Amino acid sequence: YASIAPYPYMNVDVGFKFIKDFQIMDKNLTQEVVTPTYTGSQVTSKKIPGTQDGHLLRFQFIEWLVRLANGKYKEPKRVSLHSDALRMFLDKDITPHSQ
Image (cartoon, rainbow, N blue to C red; front, side, top):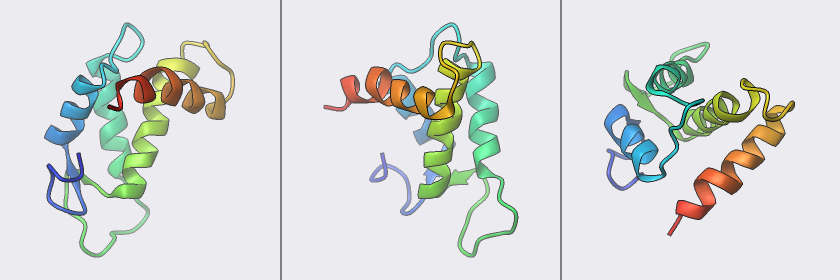
């Protein structure tokens, strides 16, 4: 997905292609949850040189994955810890579709 977007950024179109390709959305992780998690991951305390509005850098992409994991597994109380949500997200949603 990094090769689709202009390096070193990931724009929203590529982000939603990732969501679709990895079949991440379900009854807990809907469009109404995914969109604010993407937007929230763009926010930083100060403007980082070279950043573009609407695009994620690598560390923001990782934050987005954590927010998605929390939305899918922690908020509906399927797990109690953020780390468990991320582990489950990686094991059930990312790894099986990473071919």
